[in-house]
Image (cartoon, rainbow over the protein chains, first blue to last red):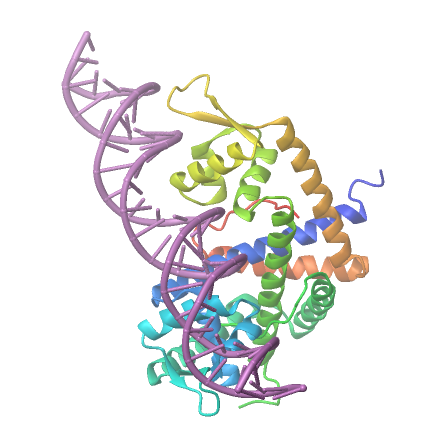
Length: 159
Length: 159
DNA sequence: AAGTATGGTGAAGCGACTTCACCGTGCAGG
DNA sequence: CCTGCACGGTGAAGTCGCTTCACCATACTT
């Protein structure tokens, strides 16, 4: 037993904060996406498409860290929503190229706008210094987290 | 257009970090819980039970911010797993009291241990000062987040 | 040409969650 | 007392994300 708040306690308290942010952020994203008729998983795929351009489903599966079968389902949903098309891959007749439609591009622009808005709402009150400190600390935590989770490779994310 | 990295860009970068932590942390928790035959949702309920003691399902539903119907299903799972029992409420014959079994208590101890271990792995490399800065910044973000999300009330969380 | 690896999908199933309907009980007001 | 409404909990049915296994068509290798 050490003092009234041991170093261990403080670390657990920090973890609690992170988890709570996780929960609340998840709720906010789920809700705001649902308002646009989207789901988090489908949006993640669309968002990934924005970064990499038209891709095969295999590439998307690897990028999202999920199974090929799952991507098939997500793309199905996006096709039904008119946000994405499946086109034949010019050099490999097994593969299909997933490409955003015009409507999909619009949605992506809107998502980026929402992302910037949320970032402003969450971090607008922090000074540049404090923001830097936060990012640095999170980067350090991320490093340890990536070492802990097999396949810790993610990319940016929306709203 | 401002400089090469505008204030807006830096906030978006910060949001990216937070989201990535969210994703990775979610994976880690899901995986480590699955190794114990648990799921995140069921564990959250059990964890809540640890904090409040035997509770009715209505109370649990409110505490977890979910529906009563959903709690029924989660408790079903925990009962099947032998971690929890449904007992009649002594003063209200409509309600059922959900209570951890001996096995459930053991699991809770193990979860708390895992939580402390993870907190150590993630934050062990940060000085007390930097840890304080992180917690403060997260608290500020949480405040804004709670204002943004309807019903932003969460409690602690496991592994 | 034969054998194997790869991209993608059908089928089936689990877990979390929702909505709607419904039952049994608690708690008033008349 | 007893009628009526509120509340705790559950059945039924459906959506979404995701998984595993089997399987097809195409590509690549030797």
